[in-house]
Amino acid sequence: MNEPEPISPRARLQQLQAIPERQRTDAEWDELNELEIMLASSNREGAPQPGGRGHNPQQGGHSRPGGGQQHHGGKKPDRNFHRRQPKRGPR
Image 1 (cartoon, rainbow, N blue to C red):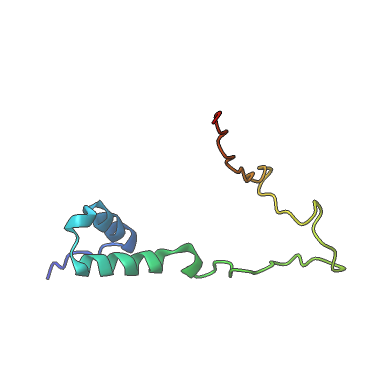
Image 2: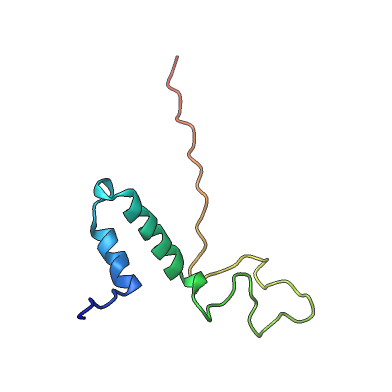
């Protein structure tokens, strides 16, 4: 008569994540994977679809200002540094 209340998917996910990886059973791994997929932001109802442009399409086919580089929130893009070869000593 007094059935336990069903646990929310988020709470169950946290319970499973609290178990050390080496101690999880295959069934717990499967449940964890399913919950992560189900709760992923891209799978939620009403979430924007990947690649969607929203309601502001570009007009006239012009490229983005700045030579096509995408800037994220004022953050400068990461630079690619190359390690130089060490100098050789006298032979």
